[in-house]
Image (cartoon, rainbow, N blue to C red; front, side, top):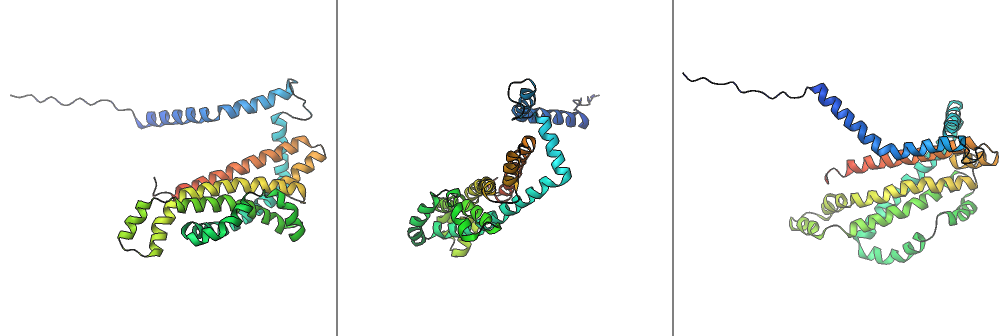
Length: 273
């Protein structure tokens, strides 16, 4: 009589144990990424209190956060934030509408590239803020001039990266597509454009950062609302904690824009993954 031994099963970790292990791993990973930021905030909090820096000019981080919260509760910060974000969005979107199609045309058609390259080289090397007085003289000190300066600043990184993306598409992809006798429109929409997306988004992310920086500088020169105006106003009136609260808001806004554009890039580059 043959005796069949039942296979012994290895005890697998239960789902709660797996979940807790994953949570711990995620916590450790997040801590490693944020440890330098935590140390920076801690130094900011302790340095003024220990007299390492003048407290009048650099308040502790806790005071800045209290001032930031008070500005949110009263709605004062939101008013300036709304003004800046709307100007940035309008200028940024207009730049995309202008720069991406123009970049695709210049990158694909040699004649357009030969005709437009000299004027592009002239303006790409002109700082946007250097032209701010011109924009104000022509368009006035209102919203149009601020949106226009953002449009000008955002156009160049998007345009130049789009041109580079189209010019550097792998020739083997183009030859393979043409060997299938597809139309020029399908070649452009199914091969050229998808292959160009990663490089185009590099320019878009650069433009997103530039939109905020240029706008803040423009608001510091001539505006009645906006984060740039608020920071300058706080400095002139010696509201130092409020000034730093405005700077922190700009940093958070930049992170938000960068995260949003990174998510959009992952979505439109799904084929690459």
